[in-house]
Length: 226
Image (cartoon, rainbow, N blue to C red):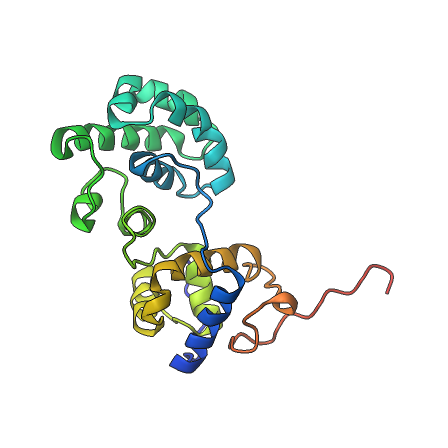
């Protein structure tokens, strides 16, 4: 992730207002990865690194039909997993990780996805961000998974300036009101994906523009021929 430009930090009243607005717009935000159980959620998140959710969903549609469990994935084998996910970037390495984590789930966790961070991060291909997503979505823990979208929004808006994903995550835990913590990372990721875009943030239609510290705000594009 690129080093962000230094911006001022928003205060708690502004942060409260931002998440109130997000809640008004979408009270129950959802992630966009498709899954059928805790295991397929874990696999989908592992596969989503440096790939789009839409691309992962397309690749896993059949994979999760034929291997919706650790045992099924191990039976499929690395080559079989590769065949199903070859449209995803870095698919060979990801296939190896999915096979290995499936083996470990069978050997160490009775085939169940653990609900503890340390155990999740011990699995092949699972880092802090992946663990946070699984803990949040499946186990309903108030974790915050910092991807490139959330990292950008945290810095650009002034909500949670930080030089690393962990700094942004820590800053958000300090400023997000407790009642909004469970959904905070979904709101921020979706905001970064569809409105606060990397190249040209669409400030003219941003629902939190009045509190955001990003300047200059991007104006409404001129219509062709005007």
